[in-house]
Picture: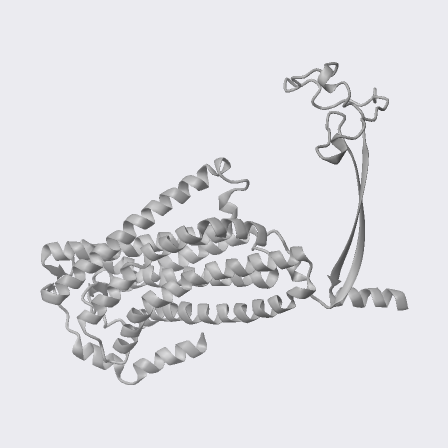
Length: 421
């Protein structure tokens, strides 16, 4: 974080701010002709695709959140991965609306500063660009927590983090408005409405730094997780089969989650590079920003495609990986557990298999035993009926399981200390 701040600061220290102020001039109106008009049309169409797709997926997920009992065993809101993706789609929707306003400018034939459309476009871009990056970073942080700790965050803490992140994103949009009023959003060097180049500190601390922090932060986090899981997979030969399956499921979850920052990095990097060049005083052309804007406008549709392709596997694997913590035990020492399970079979139950053909053994019925279902209307066949007359015996079954599993170093040391003491 400190290193990134120094790098961005150095961009302005080289006379970049004077160059921007010198090259940029305030315009009440910017005509759209030729290539600029074509790029704005493309930007608006791609943004419209993102708007429709994200709105459709958000409607679908909202329906599943409300009526989850019809489709899932557990509440979909308890799946923290899906909740984070849902919030990312909300940011994508906001960004898509901002770039859809480009079609309004095309219909007008020019961009007009001071209009409500200009103000809305500037505010949505100011919050949506860093907001999408911060939610991508939050997905990486959450995935890293699950990988390293083997469990999800407590639900109350998770909800507090999501609400706090939204408040911070909205604050990034309210600060410049509170300082300079609605006139803070003008026709920028990118040819769409955003913060005036005169407010470089607000651009740096309220926009640039959070985008670059999200991009580089996700790269660092997923690099750490890659090497960590690679080492755990190499140790998988020491684990039981159940632990190996759990580790493979967790590895698949990480692969699914890494797609979102990869998409964000590819689509946002051209625009981020253009803004870095602008900070150095070497602003790219409007055509360059038009192409970069088209990529950003399409990010919502890409996130929808990624979720659609990985949804079924993601829901299945996350349900197992976040409830199964057996992969966390990979030390080289081992312990043997012998577990005895004894259970009785109901007198109305019968075996299907080799015992079905064996001789039915009768036993004295338990007169004192009462079934909780005896008074139920579901007892369609009476106890004295012919079909159930030979199935009232109680059978005792004992199962002995012997498992060989690894023991942690700490537990091994505690056992050694007890023996020596």
